[in-house]
Length: 421
Image 1: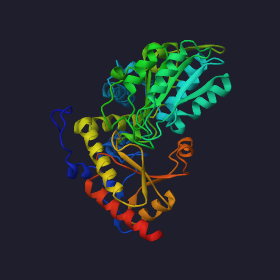
Image 2: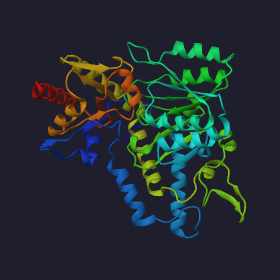
Image 3: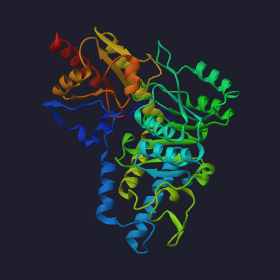
Image 4: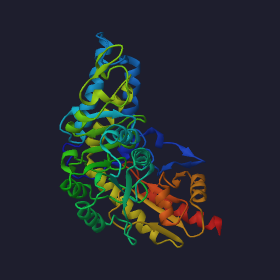
């Protein structure tokens, strides 16, 4: 364990890789090189054991029973909520609503705060790099409410956000009959790896009393994230992208907003009192967590966050930057490959296209050499259309990847080129 998690130190990759038993296997006769962590990270053995241990010794429903197992389960589940709050520096566990992940968290905001606050003619401002999880919920809402979507464009050369457009649009908002009520943006693009300046953007929006939502699917666990420092109103993330289990994540929200938002799902545990014709609701996050929650995976998420903090998020971030920078440099030396996005300011991934080879073919051939890449539209079809391609290939990295694996990736990409020419 690193004594000071805030200190930047080189990761002990041999030790880390030993924590991930899934990496110690062969695929198609070749050692597995897992470069698809933007879709889902692998899980350290301690997380797997924590979930297993819960079912072996402690399983019971939470918040209801007064017997020993229920007491243990309730304590572990609520301790996980406290851990999430501490990990993101939320003011308290009262700011943390457990969800299935980023997608459900954003839908929660859309279907509660959005249904209550968005009116006909209002504007929801997104960016052109949003993936479907931070696009479709707002399409559903604006269609129902008669509101509008607008998009912050990307700069043609670097594909970074055009912040001058944002500043101009916010100035126009003062006199616009259709006011921007909500600004939603991704912290790190799942397609381009670009890290957006969310703190500065949220500050600009809040000067105009615009509510802000940050999609942290790709940032949580890859770099230090401080909810209070960013000062957004909502932050959403997924556990399975921070070395935790699937099916668990959270919405972190300002308490003042949670108090005013109506319930989402109705059922057990979210009520204060119930009668045959009317019920009243609990306050805080429990208002939004009807039914039996995902207890085991919340406990697994707790252990995953401990694991990441033991390594140090700044160290993980520096490792991400090093891998992405090295991959960019080596791929840039190859012929007939176009890398999307800027050389710098990318976290943990490189997205690319061959001039004349479809991304799916690239991924399929790479798989024959044991290399797991992602190919397709990355749940980001509007951005693919803007880029003029149906699909891209993506190599995404995490704390267990090595420079040697990138060298092997480069050799495989050369073989892909030879295979199709």
